[in-house]
Image 1 (cartoon, helix red, strand yellow):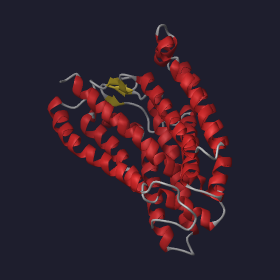
Image 2: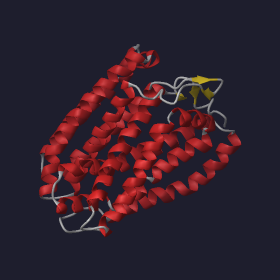
Image 3: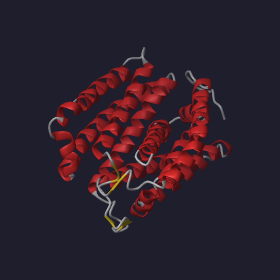
Image 4: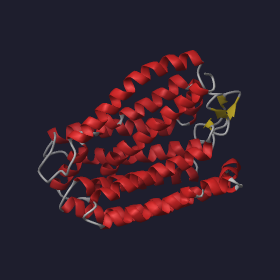
Length: 335
């Protein structure tokens, strides 16, 4: 039990984070893309494509953060002080963005400031999430199971690159979501926008894939020693294939779903690559999932409650996405 429970909780938290990145990623991406569209009708249509989903998508962020707190309190106590500033920026940005979602409709025609809040909230939240990821990947200074670094240790070129990559990735997800969910001007403009963001994301994935083993020897050992090199070689090959599928999907009016789902899988593959690089560490390079775990009794008690609630959350998510399936035409909405 002491061996298996931390692995189960790590898998649950990892899955929650992956679902958050994908599900909230595309609606953050829609916000990032707002300035690329100039008409009021396009802005209304864009916001309406994510209106039924955006607040439910953030459930997975709560599950990931809450799960880390209760199942791995040592990791939580180290990660939070190490990354307080970008985490606070992310949370404040999500608050402003959520308020803009609700107030934009009632403030018309004097709603320009809420358009700005929606865009900047989405952009800052995405960038901060990438910075948190980069700050965690590059390693946190730990002494005697306590954070021993400074408040700006996360502020490095590597974490800034990760922040930029997250913004480009979310913008790609947002653009391909709009291709899939809209018609006319918004869909056509989204095709034009999606291509440079796909190129930018692919370039940043390549840079980070080379940068991490250069600055972190343990990651170089995972990917570039034998026989690991042979076992993990499908990851970059699949990444190239997904890039091609996404590019073709963006260009093909007949397969609007292909662009979005290939972008989603591309994102997931990059996420899986980062997980592979850091297994079994929860706080690289100091604490493994077993060292950071709460008492087995606590993990088991909380797991029982999670197993009851998780199917409800999944069921609600599937129900909402099925109910609001199909394309959203100009002038239609859910507000």
